[in-house]
Amino acid sequence: MDQKSDIYSYGVVLMELITGRRAVEAEFGEGQDIVGWVRDKIRSNTVEEHLDAHVGGRCAHVREEMLLVLRIAVLCTARAPRDRPSMRDVITMLGEAKPRRKSGSSGVKPEPAVPAVAVDKDRPVFSTTPDDSDYA
Image (cartoon, rainbow, N blue to C red; front, side, top):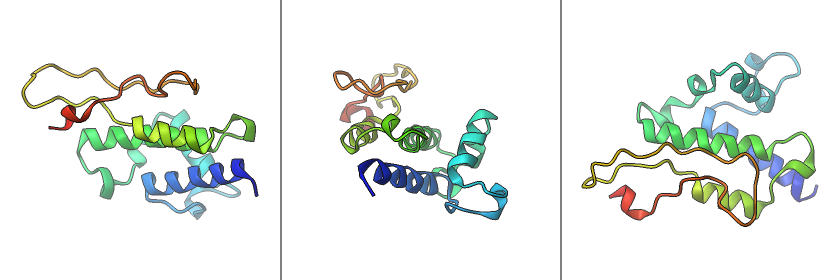
């Protein structure tokens, strides 16, 4: 086992937490695991329907955060180990995986969070990072 294998495993655990599914389930199909299943749901644009309702419920902000974390999980489970982020990058991405939220007094509609495609060590992975006042 090496660091890139650990990153893959961490991505699998994130997928399990976000979807409420186990790494291997009969429902995924013969020879399919959660990684392939999540990728299939992303391709068919139905992944949001498969988020764990016990975690996100009907709260749009929490569901958006779940989708952002799921994107990190997909990066962690890239087929080629060299394409997986380092744990340092994963920690940074998780810290930035917050959608913009309206502050109680500003009345300004927040911009949606749009994740970046590639990890650039000189700039944030996600284009929006709210400060603590966004949660007031």
